[in-house]
Length: 173
Ligand SMILES: O=P(O)(O)OC[C@H]1O[C@H](OP(=O)(O)OP(=O)(O)O)[C@H](O)[C@@H]1O
Ligand SMILES: Nc1ncnc2[nH]cnc12
Image (spheres, rainbow, N blue to C red):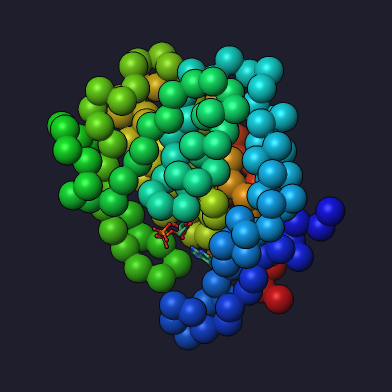
């Protein structure tokens, strides 16, 4: 199955110059959705992962499925102002904007092994901020995992000390 065919591309959204890679079409296709989740599960099932860290909002979909399949806990990294208990925060910029992410201070213990999951890496700003938050809590990052990487935007450079895995790549076609 060619998973790339189940991703919808929308030029000029949310702004001129961006080709938006829309995964809602992949999620609507049960075979493609299962296949994506299975690829992630197969990759980490033999690793000693303690927790999955998922990034707001689309990283929650795939990260939560992976945590369920691995039988481990899920930690949401959320856009500022959504987490109710004490948090750490980190600001970032992305392909079409900027923001601040937060994590609960008690979500990870020092030395825990985590996999960070998001749907897509573009400039790497969002994932880079998440890596900073996880590092501040003293947890170790096994890998950052994405469904899609946009290599033209160089996001891996923001994650220099982390292993990066992406199921699919989209160049500026
Ligand atoms: O590599 P970057 O340039 O940082 O871009 C990648 C981020 O952009 C999208 O999220 P968005 O902020 O649009 O939020 P959403 O998941 O809530 O739609 C995507 O889900 C990643 O989190
Ligand atoms: N081109 C893109 N498509 C979907 N999500 C994104 N997040 C940042 N850039 C994106």
